[in-house]
Length: 201
Image (cartoon, rainbow, N blue to C red; front, side, top):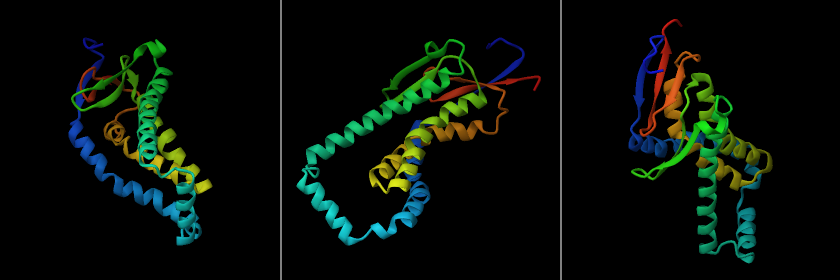
């Protein structure tokens, strides 16, 4: 495809360090978007008496053990991160000719960042769908469940994995202005992608 005169290729790369810094600052708008509706729905249940009852319950059942809490947090984050990349891969594989054979998983060890790489060019619209699906499934959906049930653990989970997807947002924001029928190819070793613009569009 690189020598195909029907396409013009542009390389787009992103600074992962800056992306991670932006992700940290993204917690403020994410908290506003998620916490305000939660509070408006469940504020009657947020009081000293209920908080005290919850603490007593967790204490009596051994849930306040620091080692247990640490183990649960690390396990949850690890599983969530694996699921995040797996959701990328499963979604993108639906739009490739070779299916899951076109999907590669790995880790950028320089930044200790796991990744999902699609080795096959995708239409911009399909790339965007695959890019946003982890946020919907691991971020938005748990938050909606917390709105319905009042379960604050789902809220915390959704907040974290919405924030964790901020690196995806940076790429998606860049692609959103592209013609949805152009092609996107993941860069095999850098944080970025190639845009192939069809000259006849």
